[in-house]
Image (cartoon, rainbow, N blue to C red):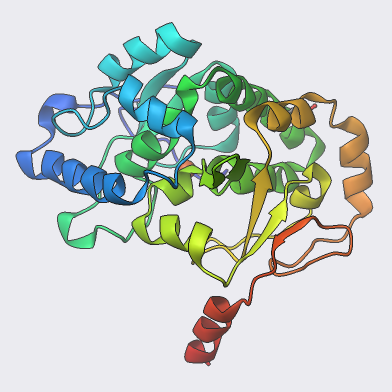
Length: 287
Ligand code: PHE
Ligand code: FE
């Protein structure tokens, strides 16, 4: 998401392009399979049931990088969503308009085989493997569409930076409480082998109960593992909490100071009080 992008030649007014599925090389398909199989070895028992079911329902391993036409056909039947190809990041209003209309914009390129863990921009593995399985869940599907509408509204009131934190701490880095323990549903985590383990098992990060207003005040980092994860009790709860009119919330948030990534407030429901050892170690190494 960004507002200073220029639409590449060949992209439609809504920034979509042809996926160009026939042009993927055998090496690129192999990169998908390698990444898929790495995640298959860490996600059972860590990823939320809805995510695992979504992978299966869409047959996302397949023979390599999925054809968006094929997964859209299945997804349409399940929740009315489809996947459209875009060249990379798209402007905020374009992004939200796609979501509000149940189209998930996904990058069509894949990372280099020599850089499996390095991403400058979200690629097809992050976008499709990470995001699309959850869109098979009817409640999450509704949440994402509502978020798109909410995004257009937040742009109008100048509070998009606060709504963007909700996306970050749920859609990208969300954890869920289940009878079997904490599970991952955030795309930024499930598409990363290292963070899939870190987010659940490392003693470093804080894990706090999800609170909408609290989340929308919390800064986030885009350069490394998160220092805090917010834990929802269920997707139903997430949707119920966010379907309310955000008008009064935005009014309160205007005057509310931002919270640093490692803050723990007296009002927080603390699930894990992190040591922050990982983040502090990185900081020292950099000094
Ligand atoms: N209910 C929010 C609003 O009134 C929109 C929204 C829904 C935002 C779901 C995020 C997720 O603006
Ligand atoms: Fe993402």
